[in-house]
Image 1 (cartoon, rainbow, N blue to C red):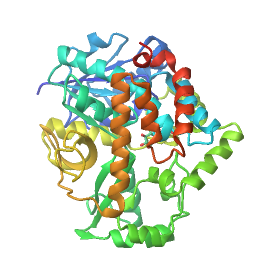
Image 2: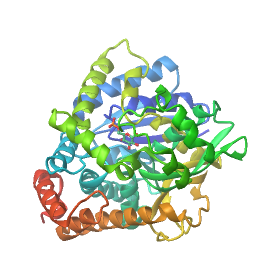
Image 3: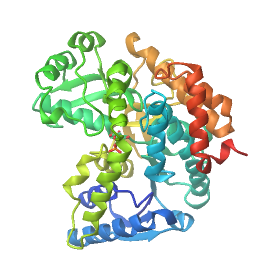
Length: 439
Ligand code: G6P
């Protein structure tokens, strides 16, 4: 059996031990020979720490995966079978700015939604497109699996402008929702699954099957009964108790990022209050990361520490490793991924990225046919897709007017005037990472 070469760009991320754990668990079905963890010079300290932990983990597990650390992306990419990207351009300091500036203007400051998400996309898209060019030259048959946020917009950019098209965008939200809902029915994954459709961080569970019977209608009542339980908590998005009438009438289950849209006032007020008290999620994450890296340094640590679960990305490695395993083994199971629409959801352009339950094959994800989204959710999804398309166009063309337009049409933006103000401030603050707008 030929061993695989996997390259993880942004290898110094605190999530890497989870990925390594996932690869170790699946070694028998996913024989990785080389795992290359790649980072930039600014990430050297983190990469050295995480890389040393990764080496201890494979040693303890006694699997023959070679861990390579590299600062030379091109060298690492040569002959790769799978490339995963988990980059944060501008590091956490840039996320802190993405969250702060909109909040200073009374708008949501969040990593993937609204102005913050737009600027994370602006910083990420040029780097990812450059990686696709390098892949075309150095490993043209490899799959690019992207986890960098905002995963849906980044997938849209690769599908439309990337030098390679074999790409899948990945998020932990669907798998997380499915696991949480399964606990409501005290069922394991062999008995329970949900069919998802929509966009990244704007995805809905359309059906929920327990032993083959659609139990979606029971979910609002069950959620109401279980609302205070630990199993229902999300690490990075404040809980909201929707009105049961709303959920019942909606008929599908929104993801937890929908709370920023369907409970805009309450979610914004909570985040603004924290901001006034001097906290944002980026600052919290910085503290969690510092603690994690202290733990990772411990030479006796040979497993992924449970503290990593304080991050919002729980189950991310499950999602990533399941996906790679299914592509590699042509498993044809169903997973929810960001991929090309190709007509699966009616009303969205064929070339656009959607997040959708798909059969995972050696030739990539084959979306389940969704057809028309229920009319009560169709409009919001289409509006968000217009926003995403504008963000990609603005970024690729380096067009500031389009950037302002994109933010103006985002449902979280109260006015074109504020959109302009916040966009101009963020452009200025992130100038160093946004060469496309300052040619
Ligand atoms: C979620 C999202 C991810 C995101 C993460 C943020 O689960 O799906 O896209 O990266 O949470 O978590 P953090 O701990 O960084 O706030």
